[in-house]
Image (cartoon, rainbow, N blue to C red):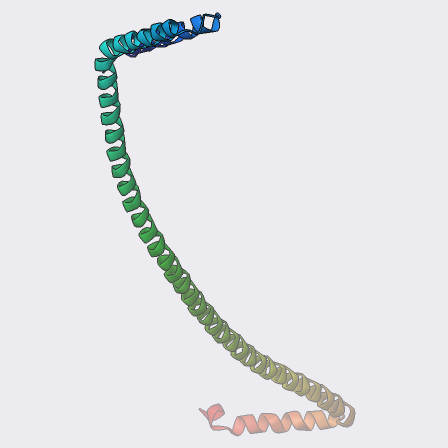
Length: 193
């Protein structure tokens, strides 16, 4: 690669040489044919010096610059094609991801509906079981209450009968009944054995 400082110095020299005749012109020199020829000759000398000294570095600079630009264009083309390929891949993956997301959402909805139905069915079964257990418990409680009422009624009847018997039966009747009971017990086959 060409040394940039060297090229810059040469261009600065060329610019100074080009500016020198215009400085003389601005200083108020005469406009004569000899002055014009002097300036033309001066220009040819400056152009010759520039051509002699700057030709090879300028050609090398422009050749290098052209190669750099060409290489940069090729690299940019490769990067562009890689970027387009990556973009196409990303777009494909994005489309796949969207369809996969939709599938997952649909699957989740289906599972949620199935779970809801399962929970409702389980709740119905439990409600039926609770209801049947409550009916059985109510029937058992009703039977227990009926037995308790019968026992209470029997006790009350026995108490009433006892009171009536005590009121209606005197001491003579009690002795007579006791004698009858004893004779019956003595006459039973278990007593004889």
